[in-house]
Length: 465
Image 1 (cartoon, helix red, strand yellow):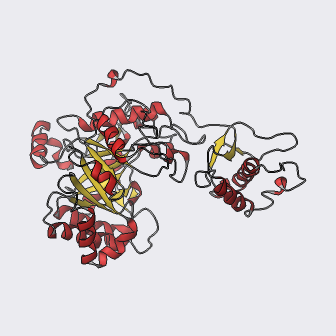
Image 2 (tube, helix red, strand yellow):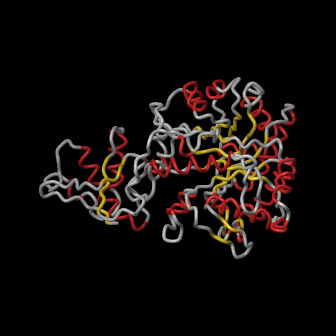
C-alpha cells in the first residue's frame, strides 16, 4: 500500500470505491446483555433505531432479540459462543445443526450479515480453543453454503493484543504464539471468502496506559495541530485510532495479506469508571463517539493513512451501561443509554448532525488528570447480601490479619452490620494486595470512594494514589 503514495488521491478513491462498492460505511451498535435491569429486546430495538444505527452486534443468537429485529433495515451480527468452538471444529453435523437452529429460522427476514465465531478467543491463554478457531470458521461457512445462505460473512473478533508490536504502525506484527499457526490460516480464509478481519480497538485504553506520551486530544480526534509521522512508512497520523488500525493493516501485510479488509467490531470510550481510571467521563465519551462516527461515515470514505479511501465498517460499544460486567468500573460504563432507556448524551449514528448541532451541553470533565490521594473500597449500593457475605469471607481468608479489626470486641466491630464489616474487609484486602494485582471489584460488589469511612477508633485501611 505504501507504493500507492504517488497515485492521485481521486484515482485511488475511485479504485477503492469500485472494489468495495458493496461495503456500507454505516455505523452500528453493540448490544450487550450483561445487566439485570435492561429493557426488553423490542424496546432495545426501538432505542437502536432512535440512534439511527444501521448495524447491531449481539454476543449470541438470542431468539427474542432476533425476532425483534425482523423486517428492520438493520444489519445484524450474531455469535457462536466460545464454549462451542472446539466441538464445532470437529463436527460438520454439529455446525450444520447450529446454523439450522440459530440462523435459518430468521433469515432473510432478519438481515443477518455477519456470523462471528467466538469473541476475543486469542486474548486469554489457550485452553485448547486457539487451534480450533479457524477450523470452526470453515465449518460454519460450509454450513451456510449447505443451507444456501450466501450473504453472511464469517469471521471472529480479536482484541488489539493479538499484536506483539503496534508502534510505530509500520512495525505492526502479530504475536509469535499465534502468527503462524492461527492468524495466517485465518487471513487465508478471510481473503478467500472476502470476509473481514474483525478487531476490537479502544484508543481509550491505549491513551490511559500511556498518558505521558499520548495527547488526550489526539486520542479524541480533537488535535488539530498534533500529528505523528511514522519513521518506517513516512505516513502522517492525526489521531490514535488510525495508528492502531494501520498497525493491524501492516501486520496483515507482513504475513502476505495486504488486502484483507478491516471491520471495527468494537470501539468506544467509557462515560464513567473507578476513581483511579483517568479520563472516563461523559464529555470524553461523547466527544470520541461523535468524532469517530463523523470520520467513519464521511463520503467519500477517508480510510487511514496506510489505506486511504477504504471504507471501514464499524460498531460502537455499547448500547447500555451493563451493571453485571466484571472488572474495573469502566467495563460497566460504555453505554449510550442508562438501563432506564434515557440517553447518557446525544449522538447521531448517521453522521449527519454536525458536531456543533448537538443542543444539550456536555458536563465538563473532572478526571482528565490522574487522581492523587487516598481511596477506600466500599460495598456498592443495591447489591446481593448473600454475595456480599461470600465476598467478605473471601477477603478475610486472604492475607495477614485482614479482618482482625472487625472481630467481636475489636475497634471496628459493629454487631449485625454486614455493610460495614464487608467494607472494612474490602478496603483492608485492597490495601494489602493492590501492588500484586488485587482490585476493588469483588465481581461488581465493591466501589471506590475518596470519602474516609473511618469512625471513632476504627480506621479503615486506604490505598494512596
